[in-house]
Length: 385
Image (cartoon, rainbow, N blue to C red; front, side):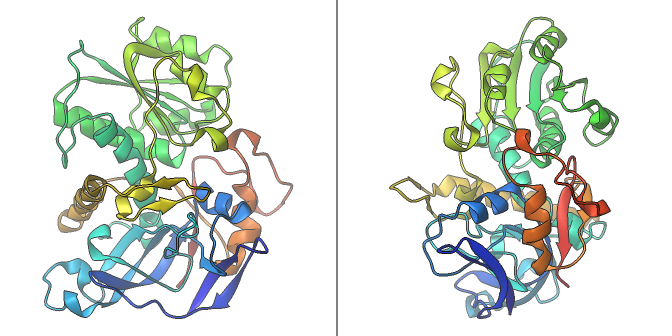
């Protein structure tokens, strides 16, 4: 098959012929129809930590089941049946230890870490959901402890409304975080006040369904933290998701918190260039990869374990997403899709160029094609079939 293969020793990637992957125990073979591009794909292409001679890049995919390991023969679950439309994510080249990649014609993955697509979702739309959807869900539910339709939780007794801030509301994480926050409100029976930061050009989108923000501020305003606190009538933020997690924004988000507030970062100190020791309330942090059930080796002795409960949560989350197939309607609205021209061979020169560096450093790269305009509020997606 064809795959977009990273050669860590040279820091280059190219489309090569690689062996067709063989499903292991509990795994299915998926013919990839579409892939979505995430900043982490570009980051570990640009700064490889993979130790193998070659690694297939890529995380998010959607496609069609075309095979399975023999131990799944006879299973009634539709996710093991040929022809079922599914989506999921794998680790790609984002670790030192060898893991599968999605930027290829085929990928293998455990069947229970897939979700079946409802009829109202295209492969391109579905490819935007899995990794960032689970990342946002991990922050709100197991880490913050909020209840959801698919997991238990509770809210520390505070007066309504519960103030939830999503910094970077128009990012992929932010778009899913808003939808999941509304699910938490429904599951808890409590009143949530959803507050977001985004450029004013995105406010109309974010005020509309399914995001339905109560308050929006422009992150470019120097006094945005004061505006956020004013929107809470001085109570402060109870739960903050910082989807950017870069430089001084970390301390600014922290400044909006209630004394008993909870704060989640999605980038480590090194990559985000901040110092969490300055924060009075220490943030939650974790890797989405723990949901895949394999430890993550980042090299230099830094290894994240794979707690069984993290995988169990991922299974429940994907079952929840897949329940939309029975109803014929997606449980989460996909990110707005920017359909990119070309296939695997255009990911590095086009998509990775748009996603390079920290979010705060991105600028117009000088390309004149319409699909190469600066990226904001969209997911870059390639059709493979």
